[in-house]
Image (cartoon, rainbow, N blue to C red; front, side, top):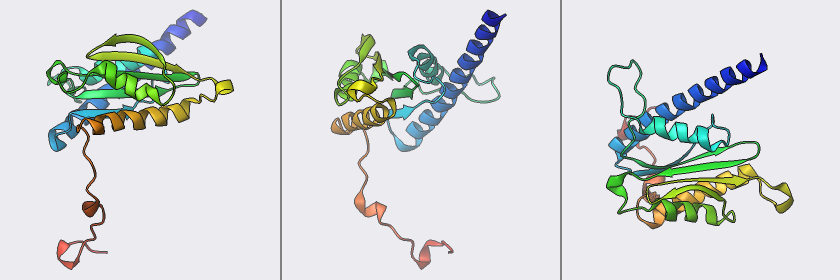
Amino acid sequence: TSRTRERMADAKQIAKCVKEGGKKGVELAGCADLGGLEFFTTQMQEPKGDCDLLQMCMDAANKEVDPAEEESKGGSGEVGKMLLSAGDKGLALINYVPESKKDKVNAEEWMAATLKEVGGGEIKKSSPTHCVAYVAENKETGRFVLKDKDTCQAQSVQYLKAKGLFPQADEEEDDWVPDDDAGVEW
């Protein structure tokens, strides 16, 4: 029946979201371990602008790594993060601040700062450590999902930079050119 096919499609979409979230969690935990970053802003593709599916990505990213599993998933529960996902009708945003870092960042302030430049959004859940928001596309008023996604990502990073929680690029390092002693062959 069509209802069974719908449920199977939903189950497949959920599995894709959990897989994407788990992989992103490992990636973020690795970056945090290597570079000392405590907060990230990143985009997720699979939820396609759905807040519930994006929450599944966040849960999978924060899940404790199971050493018995063949492929590591999750592990970024101690990393603060803002996840964004754009869909046909709107933009889903979720942030998470670990209890151990709530003295550095308030999730409600972070979400408000992120949404400010796009004129706000619908706050679906709100606490000092976790917020869920949705920004609906409205072409008549000039609200476009892809533009809002880029603006929100930039605003989230800007908020973290203003708090000193996002590394500033050192201009001198950006201009580095290897010399003959660097061991690089062209």
